[in-house]
Structure formats: C-alpha cells, structure tokens
Length: 427
Image (cartoon, rainbow, N blue to C red; front, side, top):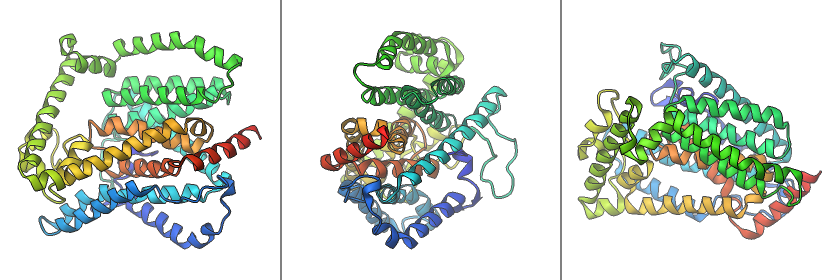
C-alpha cells in the first residue's frame, strides 16, 4: 500500500515482490498455526469461533480454481497464470479472517501503526508528484523494477489517499489529535483534487461519508462533539460542492453525469474515455453471450477475450499494449467466470455492505475493522472503471479486508465483539 502499483512490480515476470511477501506470510502462518490455534481469542472476542470468511467466499474461490483447472491448455501457461492469479488472491480472505480472529490487541495496534506509516509515505510521494506535475516517477526503470518508482496510478493512488483521509476523519471525530487529523484530512483532500481521476474522487467521497456515519453512531447522543459535527454538516456540504465544480476530477465527473455541461478539454476527454469504455464493455458482453455455456460459466483463463471480442483496439488505443482487462472488474468476471461468477461476487459485495451496516458501531471503535471497511468502499469504485482488482496492488488488500470483515457476519459474534470493543474503548 505504501508503494502502490510500482511497488508490486519489483521483480522479474512472472515473479514479483508481492508474490514473495505473500509466500513468506503464508509460510509464517502455517508454521505458527498450532500456537495460534491454542491462543485464547478473548483478546478479540470471547465467542468468535469462526476463523474463516464464510461459505460464500469459499464457493467463489473454489469455483474460480475449478474454472482455472478446466482452462489449462487453451493458451500459453504464462497467459493462463497471469489471468488466474487475481482470482486466486481470494485465498487471502481466509488468511485475513484467520489472522484477525487469532490476533491480540497489541498485534492489531502494531499493524495499524505500520499502515499509518505506509499510507503517509504514500501520501507524501504522491503529493510530490502532483505538485511537480510528474506522472512518470523518477523517469527511468531500474533493474528488477517493472515500472519506474513513484510512477502515479491516478485512480488507485486516489483510493489509497481516500483510505488515509477516512482514518484521519475517524480519529478526529473520536477526539484523537483532532487538529493534526484535520490538517492531514485537508491535505489528503487537496492531493486527491489534484489527481484527474473521477474514480479516486468518488472513493474520497465514499470514504469520508462512510466514516462520518459509522463514527457518528458511537458518539454519545448528548454531547458537545455530536452537536459540533451536526453544525458542521452545511459547511462541509458547501466545501464539497465547491470542490466538485472547481477541480479537475470534479469537473470530469460532472461531464460524465451530464455530457451537455462538458466545456473544457478535460471534460471532453472524460466523455471520450467514458464512451470508449462503454463500447468496449458492450463488445465483451456480446462476446460472452454468444455461447450459452460461455454466458453461464465464462470463457475461462488464458484466452484473450478482448482481442476475440474486438474490444482490444478501443481499450488500448494508442497509449497501452498488452491489456487483458475491460477496465471493469465485474464485466471481467462475467467474461472469465460467466453469470455464476458475477452472482457470487455480487453476493459477496452485498454481504460486505451488510456487515458494515450491521456492525457499524463495532467497526467505528476498532481501527483494524475501520481500515478493512475503508479498503472495501474505496477500491470498489476504482475497480469498476480500471484494472485494479485484476492486479496484486488492488486484489491483495481487497480480499484481505473482505476476510477481516466477514468474520463479523454472525449476529451473535458481532455483538460479542462489540461488547469487548466497547470495554477496551472505555479502558
């Protein structure tokens, strides 16, 4: 998360540093599993027997693996592995669920400290690139680097900054260094406004909205703090409206919603991008629906469905080569896994939203859960308009966060967890 896209590109195809980190993490988990299994889970919740993200995610992972197995041989092994890996990352949901359900409060606090360091590091280098108007990073690619260090990926970098903004707002509302958190929040908003990504702008809005709603629910009903935030709502709304009509991502978003308002080059470019994506999406959907078997079970992995559907020339244009995703995760799932995969991933997203709503007070009090919720709500928008969940820099945090949140899917477990979190909060 600290190095964003370029950080996961260190290594040599098809083996990158993210794969090494995951391998070491899984090995460590397996080696310490016997000790973790006997650790009392009272540090997290007295009755949290579930250490998995549930059947639904297990079915999605199992179906994906099965579809991968039946896709072997329809293309080169490298292409098959490259297309399969993002779906195999769903195994991280099981690792996230198991690790958080066996964690101590000290371990979770240490994790959050590391996350804060990573996200602030990310904010600083992205801000430097925005201020200097440098999208290319250091300008050259060192050995073992897939892309130049500090190269911007506008949509995902915006989403990561949105996570930091949400964490800052949460701490500010809870009275933890409120002045410092307000300054950090303002800086995050300014940097996102300096990025051209509409999806990153949406992620920031969702992050702040979700945190405000969740955290407001744990502020005592009769308190000066609650009255202060209610009074601040009109001012915040006006500030958001001003940002929408005076920044590049805001203007691009307005043009996307209402094309008749497109007047400048950035807005016209936004419309062109939207139209190109819609054409490519339509071609991919038509290609998938050409066969009943493909429509139900997808085209599998390894095949270049963008070329086969004719969408590749629209997606690549003159700027990109070797693109294998339609810039929409759900349409990509449809092409790879068919309606079976789409229904499964849609149910998983709905389950995650349900957990966030039902366990909002608990999530507001427990930082690691707040982080997981923010990862979900910020990555989903950018994954709907870009290649994010098809890459390790997006898929790894997303599925880890999904696993953490889905440990709360049971009403009784969530309630017990909330009682323990409340006690820890008061202490």
